[in-house]
Image (cartoon, rainbow, N blue to C red):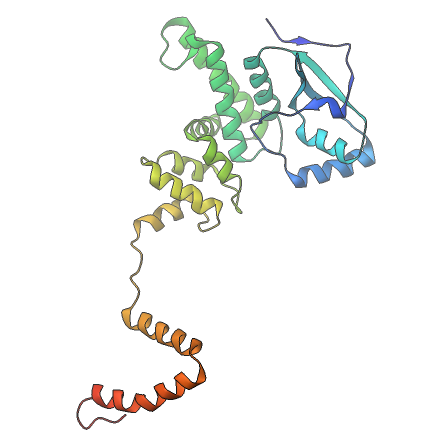
Length: 273
């Protein structure tokens, strides 16, 4: 079955459009900007919705849909299609790839998802396939990379590197990296993809997500550098200070009265207190 566009449908009730798990979460800043833009200029670009037996499911336009909810609009312009599950995932990836606001992480996720879904739909095009099908898949990948490279003003090689980095990311790593106070770039993603052991990889992702490292390279270097051992004298002094601060006044007076005798015992004979 090919994707079928239901051209008789132009608007849908906002309340009837459902959202399922998506490749990219909604950005609060983007929604706020759309609320202002739609309020000032009206709704300009229709959302993409899949019609299923269980209801209408959003494929593209989560920010626009949320903006219309906040504006308390009853209806939203939509393109409605009927398709299979794999076709729906392909449509979602393609619709997002043309967006201008994608971060390197978003690009990596969508590019990887698109290739994965396409290869599920056409197993004969997976890497290593022999013959005409394999050659055709190589040409298709080059075409996709060329189109994106031209649209974004980057090289085809750069697009291919982003796709490869996305292939190496796990869903939980993607979710954590989205929390990073400093958005991760391609170098970060490539560095993470090359980490061989899982423990180090998770530590590096956590360091970026929690803001303990600005770059993946910095997080990797920190793991290789042994932690400095605390000075035992400093540790003992800190412990004494804390004990002094917590002690009641009577205990402090008793300690001060004892101090000269203890110092006299610890100093060389004839030494000053």
